[in-house]
Image 1: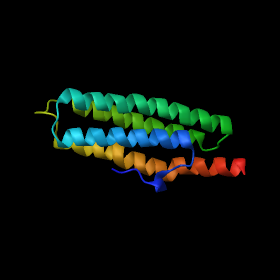
Image 2 (image 1 turned 60 degrees about the vertical axis):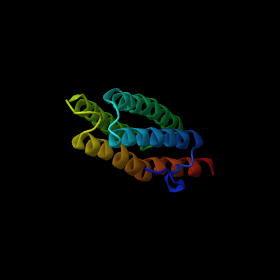
Image 3 (image 1 turned 180 degrees about the vertical axis):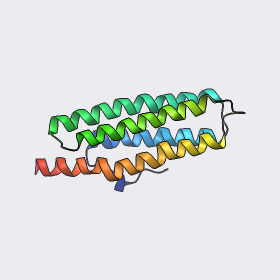
Length: 136
């Protein structure tokens, strides 16, 4: 999964946080593919959960301060992601041989890759446009 400029929201702090999420997601997917130890995978999933909560809080605060009307939709989508991360944690807690299981790999890809790219492209970018219009 590669960060490209077409994913940029146009808000430096948010874009930097998204880039960090991409880096950590890539770390997780690589750890699963290489069947690294369970502790490393679990630690990365935990980081993604914690970092998403931090990022979502900052994003929502900026939206609230800007009077963004899409804030409630953002909160709902963020809640879905956190629910999905909880499911990923659950799957990671199930018995697996070494670091990887097919189900864990599929779930991780759906949750952290598909969701975040879709969310950035279809929701976060709208906030970037809103801020640029507000500041114009």
